[in-house]
Each structure stands twice: as C-alpha cells, then as structure tokens.
Amino acid sequence: MDRARSDTADTADTADTAGVVDPESEVELTAAESRSVRRRSDRDEGAVRVRGGTPITPIGGPEDVDPRRHPRATVIGLAVVGLLFVLTGFAIGTSMRDGERAVLAARVPVPRLDGNTLEEATRTLEGLGLLVAVEYQPNEAVPTGTVFGQRPVAGSKLEVGTEVTLVVSDGPAGVKVPDTTGFQGSEAVKLLEANGLAPVLQPTHDEKVRPGEVLRTDPAAGSRAVPGATVAVLVSDGPAPRQVPAIAGTPIAEGFAALGRAGVGLGKVTATVVEGTPAGVVVSTDPPAGSAIPRDQPVDVVVTESAPSLKAPSVTGLLRSSAAEALADSPLVISYRNQTVAFDDSRSGRVIAQSIPAGTAVSPGMQLQLTVAVAAAPPTTTRVPGATTTTAP
Image 1 (cartoon, rainbow, N blue to C red):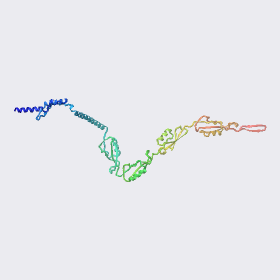
Image 2 (image 1 turned 90 degrees about the horizontal axis):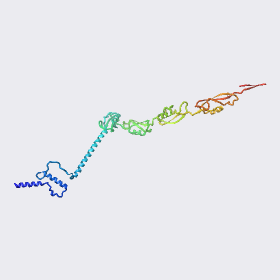
Image 3 (image 1 turned 180 degrees about the horizontal axis):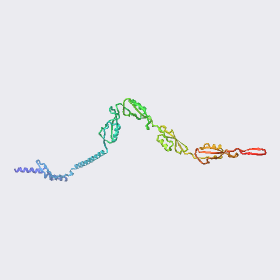
Image 4 (image 1 turned 30 degrees about the vertical axis):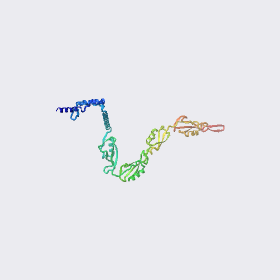
C-alpha cells in the first residue's frame, strides 16, 4: 500500500510539472517572452488538472493581452472600424439624397383618358404637368380623334415632365396621309396620288411661307383616309393683300405711321400749297384709300407745305402792257381800271395807282387792281372871221 501511495505521489508530481516552464532552462528568452512565461506559470498554479495532465483554467477575471504580441490583429481591427464608419456615412448620404429626390420629383397619378377627345386629354395631362405624345391607330368602333388607349396605364404614378402616349382613333383602317409640308404643290399632288388619294390644291395666304409651298393637308399628315378620299392641300399664296388706310387730313407723322401698321410701303412724297390748310398735312394718297394692294407696295403721298413769302410788286409808272407782262406769273389776281387825265398829261397809258402798295405782304389769290391813266380828247377850235372860238371837249 505504501508503494501505491508513492506511485500516486510520483504521478501527481509529474502532473504538477506538466505545462510549467522551468525558468532556469529558458536562459535565452527575451524579456517579453520571459514575462509571458511567468504569467502562464502563475495561472497554471491555480488550474484544475484532469486525467491526462491538461490544466483547465477556472472562470475568473479578464486576461490581460499584450497588444505588442498581436500587431496584425490591431491593424485589422482598426481597418474594420474605419470601414464601418465609411459604410454608415454612405448609407446616410444615400438616404438623404433619396429623400431630396422624393421631395423634388413630385409624382402624379395618370388619369384614365379613354373616351376623351385628343384636345380634352391633352388639356388634362398638361394640367398635371405631363407631356403628351400622340399615336394614331385605325379603329372601327371609336370615333375619329377619340382616345382609346394610353401608355402608361391609368393609375400609374409619374414624375412631373414625364411623357404619356395617347392612342387616338383615326377612324376605319385606310391609307396613311403622307407628310407633304414644305413640298411644292405639284410634288405634293404626285405623292398623294401615288398613295391612292385625291389631292386638291387650295391657295392660302401666309405671311412667312414662300408662295407655292405646302402649309398642311386636311386630313392631317399621319392620319388615315379611305382609298380615293379627297385630301385638301393648303398651299401658300404669299402674304394677304393690304388695304390702303384713309390718312388724308391727318398730320404727316400720324399718316406715315398708319401706312406702316397697314403693311404697305411709303412711296414718293410731293409737297404742295393748299390755301387754308396748314403745312404738314396729308392731302391724298395714290393708290387711294381703300385700295387692296400687295404687302409692302409703296404708296405715293401728297402733303401740304407753307406758301412762299409774297410781296406786292411795284408796277406804278409802267405802261399797261409792261405791267401786264411783269405780272404774268404772279399768284395774284390782276384787274384794271381806267382814270381820265388831261389830254396832254404825260402819264396817259401808264399805271398811276395800285390797290395794294408795293412791298406789302400778300398771299396767293389776292386781288391787285391797277389804275391806268387815259388821256382826255383834245379841245376843238372854230375860226370865225375876225374871231377865234375854242370849245373844251
């Protein structure tokens, strides 16, 4: 029995030394490694050993870890923490941007538009801030110009400014009217006839499109028509005629402005003197007011001007014939009266007076009367023997 106890003691001593480092045998260890060995030795002293000699550490306080023994783990830990911060910031930023987009991009529900006319449906969608595209399709049952389909469907929620396609009936299936806008009329006729339609040219005034070019068709391009149907081709006939405005009696500036507003040009301007009318007034136009003329055709205008300054001429003392010659181009109205003078008066046959003194300001058409001296007949003499008798005329 004593031997058994001895064996048991030897076994226990062996177990006690298992896992314990002998400090004397580790003479080459570094200081850090020595401290680690001592800590393990201290822990092993309080360990519970089981069969096989493996120590089990009981639950106790936290174990100190020397960070210098695990530098890679420290770096990895810091990297993981930094990555978590980055991912968190990105998630917050994305959430905020999504929220901003949700606020800025308002969404509206698409209404059901079947049965509406194209004009009604367009008005409704534009009122919601949506864009409209039109797609014509033949339909035997739905009246021409009526919506019978849409993309996207009713109830969809779209951002403001999104396009909605309306499917519009263009009546029974037929020939699609080609687009001839901008074609010459003759070219449009050939194209429409080649598509089995019957084109008819209709001249239409237009202020911008050159004469002879197609403005549009009726039915419109893109719609459908039964084979052989008549298609009106509206061709530009140039600008509409202009009517000459009535500007006689108006001031020059006002009259000229009226011509510009009417779309006609200003032609030759002639000035004339009109008695009783102040200068700067329109007298007449050519063509006359009310005439229809092409756009920009010039209109000649007659306006008043001030009369030149006139003074009564001096013709006193001139022979009547000389005075008449001098006043031949005068704007005055000339008249004559005779005044008898002595038969031997040297003034006989000459102008001895004028109704308007020379140098007086006059205006065209005024009366100027000239007085001309006319010699009286000479006296007669009767001779009687022994006496002479003279009789006055």
